[in-house]
Structure formats: structure tokens, C-alpha cells
Length: 189
Image 1 (cartoon, helix red, strand yellow):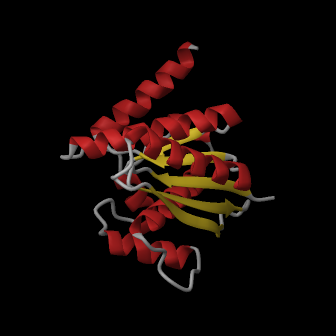
Image 2 (image 1 turned 90 degrees about the vertical axis):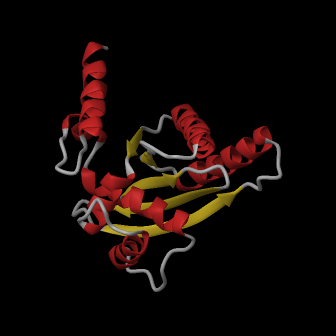
């Protein structure tokens, strides 16, 4: 039996999603990919609702066992960070409503998992996603490829219970502290 995993590359203008299925041998197969777009000319609340409604449709159609979201640790453009945070919050809420666990990965973790280097360029990530999923064409736009890379990362990193205690050689000090804080808060409950 396959485990279905939804990867999300959150964004206010373009929100990429990628669905993969992982079997017991950890082989990952392509299921679906897409991008939800919201024009910057729309009012913010309408943009958020549009993306939320489309992601809800993806969740209900593919019924993932878990959702992996790319986390942004630093970004020079504050408006971009706020948009990503808003979209991520909506997706976490939608998942919580459906009882679907959510995990976050940094871009460095995703690049390292998919290419072997946390400093890989976007085109390297796209090529590896194409190769791993045996796709005839590169997944485009980059938001779609990134979402598939996030899903692949989650498939290869193991289940959510092992992730809370797992350390990665690609972790920065900030990531390690974040992981430890999450594990600590779960023990206190």
C-alpha cells in the first residue's frame, strides 16, 4: 500500500503543490502537480480565500497521509515572507480540520535531500525531481518542481514520529534548535 504525500511551495502569487506516493521500499511515484495563482490586483482576503479553496480541493481529491510545507527561514522581502506565512497558516488550518499531520522543511533541507547538496541551484533541483519521478519533461513552473521536491523530501525522511527526534547533517544551528524545541514541547504535553 502506498502512502500519499502532498508537498507545498507556499506563495501568495504562486502556490505550488505536488503529490507523490511512496511504497514500502521508499520508491516515490508521481501523482499530481500544479500551481494555484492569485493575481496581485486582487484584494488580499480574496487571494487568500482563492488559494485556500484550491488547496482544500487538492486535499480532498488526493487525501494525503501527510503534508510537507517549505519553510522560509530568511528572506529580504518582508512582503514575501508575510505572504508565505499567511498561505502556510491557511494550509496548516485546512490540514488540521482534516486530521492530516504537517511537517515543515527549509529549502536547504529539500535541496540536500533531492540533490545531495543544500546549495544546489533551482535547475539542479528540477532535473533531479524529473529523474526521481521518471517524468518525461521538467516540472514547470519552478514552484511546481519545488513542491514535488518537498514531497519527495518528506517521503525519504521517514514518518513524523522519527522526524521529531531525527538530526540531519544538513541542519543549521537554527534548524537544530527549532527541531529540539518542537521535540521538547511534545514531551511536555
